[in-house]
Image (cartoon, rainbow, N blue to C red; front, side):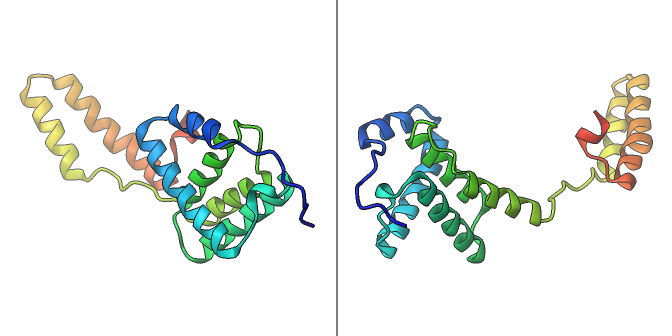
Length: 162
């Protein structure tokens, strides 16, 4: 149920100050996400700033679901939630929207980097060998053949090894 009395939200001055503390690239990503979200709010005539914290969370959750259906970037939605949290000085958590983003992240397949091609490894070993570093060349070769190939077969990740 929507409240008729407006809730206190971040003033534009405080919000812009908090966002200005970020790195320039992060500021740009957050500004892009916030501008798109503000357009969405205007389009739907949604009084986002006057909603309670719980209503804002679920409205944001709906927006994330719409973005997921439109095959938008997961990073974009993550940036939006982080930007809104930053605007409120970290006082809002948006738990449902964060849980939706986590579920979206888990439903996507993991993008793993391709293994290093054998030719590249052998070229490295050859260069190290020609630099008169025979023990280092042997170590690189053994690591590539022994450790890396076993890791590929077992689909190991860094946290599995550590």
